[in-house]
Length: 234
Image (tube, rainbow, N blue to C red; front, side, top):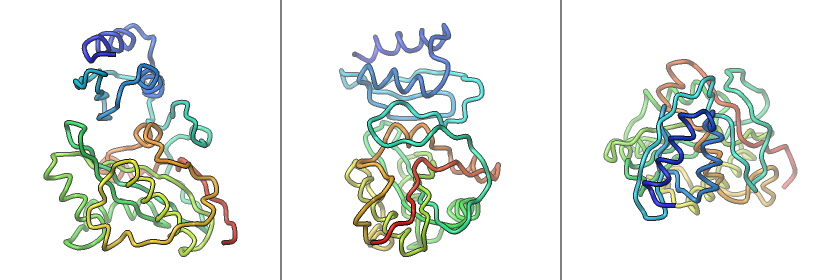
């Protein structure tokens, strides 16, 4: 569907109440074979079959951005944002940024036992050559927003979690993300059995669940994970 026709159709559906959530909007975009290029606070950037980009605007009520559209990838039940930390395991998370024109995207994949503290560190304690510093430099050059998504909960020790961190980095690179300075932080093993994880980067789910990093830090929230990896032997 061309950009002009798609914009009119989607905006009319939003304004008339046929589409009432970001999840429904993403499902409609997928069904009409539109490419999502940007997920803003009150708008969605899309690309039509003619290659032209456009935006539709919305004001969905009670939209936690954790509703996920139908996918062939394994999915947990939809969950709300919370700030309760689990114990005896690690979270795998992604920091992502997309260029305004939707043509380029970059990411940082990490693991932590304390999401609120780690997100705060990324936002306030970046320094050259360390962790996500290069991603923030990339985002600044592209004038892009850095968003955070909790990808998976790993029930196991740090060595076990590192394998899933490596697995998610592989999925991101295969999906076209660049990983600035990954030679410093991304040399990780991968699990022989990525239990509970998707076979490819779940773009729609990650996009729908992502939240601007400053917003997470400001409100002290942590999104619930998209997937879960139970402890298994290697």
